[in-house]
View 1 (cartoon, rainbow, N blue to C red):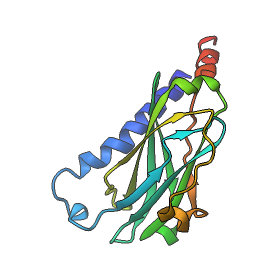
View 2: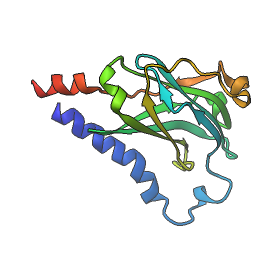
View 3: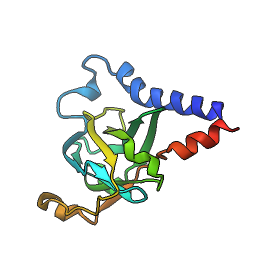
View 4: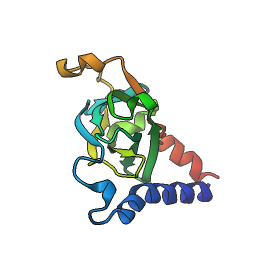
Length: 177
């Protein structure tokens, strides 16, 4: 268990930090207009436990070589977790749609607030500015009406955010081992 946690932390650190280390300064891949840009985003601020939470994005890359969307989940009592969603070739220049994060049914999550940071990377490891989505859990939350400006991509799934939100029950089970 400790090895898995350590591996997750190291991978998260490398994914987030290493592109910045290699691209400090104005490198040829980082010149204006050549990296991916998230130009619009939306997500509800609360979600009902046990449902999928959707994060809507519109991004483009003038170089036409976007390859992945990286999501980093931070929350109370746990280390940040990173998930990578690989983009299909048809989305290498422009992508519009939603990512989804499955949530557990753990009612202990009702008192917690999480933050999801999302950015897009291209094949040269350039990355967009991160967009941030704070969210919490609410039993009263029903599927909210999607704003009009997102109706055109309401059924365009980009992919899953492969991160597991671990609630209090999971933490207690791990302490007993």
